[in-house]
Length: 395
Image 1 (spheres, helix red, strand yellow):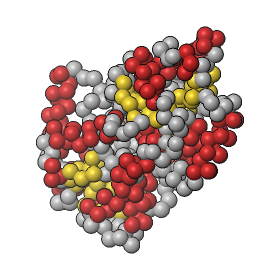
Image 2 (cartoon, one colour; image 1 turned 90 degrees about the horizontal axis):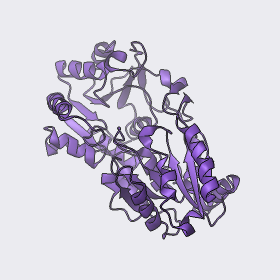
Image 3 (cartoon, one colour; image 1 turned 30 degrees about the vertical axis):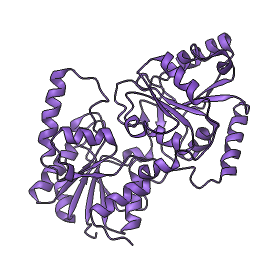
């Protein structure tokens, strides 16, 4: 096993990070090695949010070197000690990297890697999603949390921020500006390779299969159908739409979860009340999502203050050219708020949400309006920033 320049500690392979490792390995072959606490999730796992077995249909263990320690105690991801530090010291000693990158501080696994790196005199960097707005906390808990992060961050040399709220969090907790580097949140762009005509065709086919005509306005949602995401506000906003707009509105839910039964009930009620159709796609895997976003016109992520640190579905919707509305508790809003067809509404305010939808309904459906603004929020930009900051050689 060759010694890597950069050793990356990650809890498990996830679709939001694996493409970074694959791309960096393409930039600088054999310069990185990823250490996973577990890869049990790759074969499929029960996702409580989606309410079903999930197995991502993209190659999560190809295109880069990795080691799986399987340092699991009980149920993975269920608490601090559910991913242990077993094997961490030994793998650091064996591979002797020049630098270490952590993707979180949530588990014993992460903190063991940080401690052993400091003992060995290896510089440590961190890229995670922490921010200070996503959760509502009592003052005493916020105070203790702040003390904890200030203490932990003193042991870290470099920080990669995923967006503005993440950057503000670091600065509020003692990180110096010169320690900060951009590595913004991205999603793999699944419409980039399509021509304009192919996008139009995919949109038309998907809408036709769902029984949606060209004149109808599709208001979409994607993700887990759970209270945190607040998907049922899409029905409440219908009560505040002008009759003329409501008459041509279709609601489109891409995802699954515990609220699906109650949402289907509301679908029946609102069809009887207004004649508004609802489409439920169920869980859609990564290779199929682009067509559904192309079928939508306005995308809404109305999450409550329950942990929406970013909202990657917003990146996907923007890549497909949707207009977007998010609640003021969706983390990416701080980054995208100035975009032409992007709006923010106050948490759980269905009337204000309806006004934003009316405002955006004036735009004709195009596909590339947001593309220039997304260049810094691309896989290529993220991987390149990380590779260059570690001086990894470009192939």
